[in-house]
Image (cartoon, rainbow, N blue to C red; front, side, top):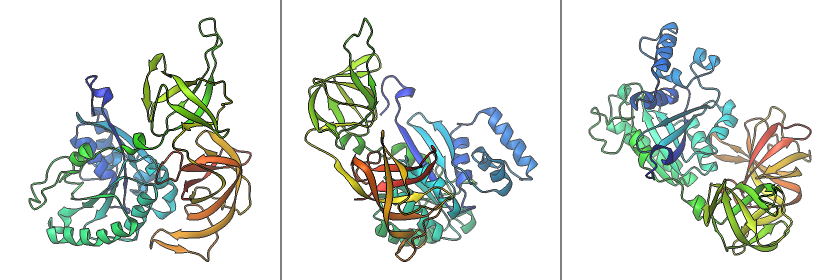
Length: 423
């Protein structure tokens, strides 16, 4: 909630858009920016000029987000385009993610931090395989709110029957994927119906337009309600005349809250101590919560370094060297069984390798494939991972930060895979 400090302290909502090619993702974002008056005059002039060069009869609002030359020429989105805008009620970061199956990795990247996902459906085509795929990825990434935007309603005469049929069909997908909060909005991104302003062409729809919904949906509160997790990034020891004995452990709170006086355990050593001081920059705090970046001082001289994790004594994470994960493979070189990778988990790193491929997911039909062990770029699979030392982790469904990890190719800093811990 916005505080008395005003604009800078407003809530931030991250959301992603997904849909098939030509469903209107980029046009929707352009309309949001245009109708909410979040475009600079020079940006609008540039888009008007580009639209004229491309032979568009009207201003092509999609060009506000389709930043790559290849996208503008083909009219598709192949990269993740991030845009920022704000209203008097909330700030927003938008990730316009690709619809093509060969860019699944880009969608996973763009949606991984989202609080909400807008899945566009062409009212003329209804639910298609790509709708299922985008919904599956949203489910996989534990996105809290799903907005099904039924677009191009102007091309079906703003028919309530078409809208109702799509809702009934999508409800089956929602139930199968156990999606949490699903909203349905009939829109025309091109004409602006129910994007920022309520449509006069669909009086039968009495809900909020997309912007009104995005301004009002509750943000994920679970990050502070989850158990306290504090991956240590850096040991702070100034050793100056002013601070001769100061020692603290800096990092960003992944989840939960911490107070001075709380009993904690340092992992992996399982050393117990008590929080004596919390600092946020030059400000001393009595309490801190996710996702603040702070430093913590402890009562005891314990062994803490980058990669350690500080947790509360009464709620410990899982620990182990054998972990079951859903992995999205991001690299053109296939995943190899028994090949060594660097596994990066929060601030910790360990060597690791995949010991078994349990199944691959057909993300168009939502079925598991058990007789295909070839994991190539954009594939999603459930695998068993063995790491060289115990990691302290949570399940991804409970904690997105401590429940995720990435694969780095040995000898490089190249990310080749992203994993979500399921067991």
